[in-house]
Length: 152
Image 1 (cartoon, rainbow, N blue to C red):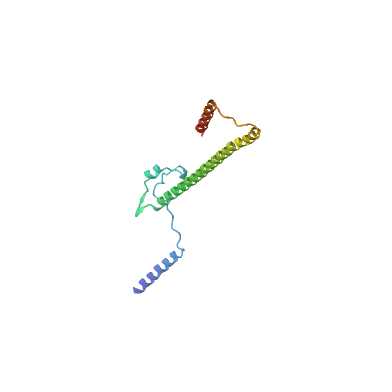
Image 2 (cartoon, rainbow, N blue to C red):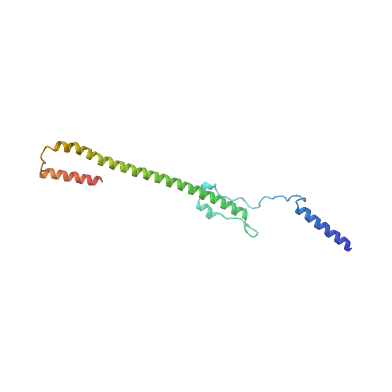
């Protein structure tokens, strides 16, 4: 009887060794018994989708596969959003820089025109005596100055 038990023990150990080495065949892979997550595509995900999400509960907590899938979709959605924000910020900075450049060019053009016109006029006025403005003329200039200040 003792001999039979020893032989049975050796057979069991040999079978365990054979199975652990991969000679016993493979176990069948079963599909998960949890329903698929009802999340939209990553680009269309909204905060309300995450609030309404109910992850399936497994034997020892949440289903690992469902949590991994959810985290992957959220990370893709956040990455797409961050990329879009970066592109839009770049466009805004380019537009504001172009607007600033256009404003500076306009200022340069405005300041360059009076000085160019003033030089030929100064050459003509060099032989004449300066005119003393009358009261009506002074009021006209003050009005022009007020109009210029309003334009700014």
